[in-house]
Length: 40
Image 1 (cartoon, helix red, strand yellow):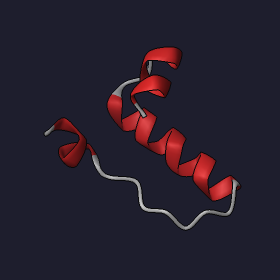
Image 2 (cartoon, helix red, strand yellow):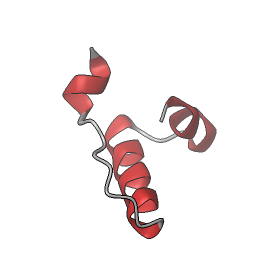
Image 3 (cartoon, rainbow, N blue to C red):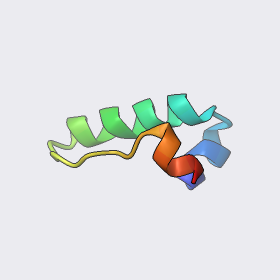
Image 4 (cartoon, one colour):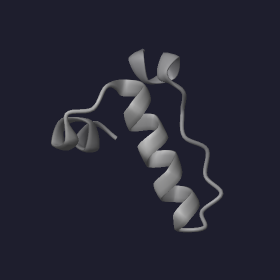
């Protein structure tokens, strides 16, 4: 996720949404950690 954040110059919450939508499009049922987990 950090690669996408740096590559597209996105804030953290937008990066999480971007990754979630990409996983949904690929039909993966994986959970993306929320922003408080990623900040730790």
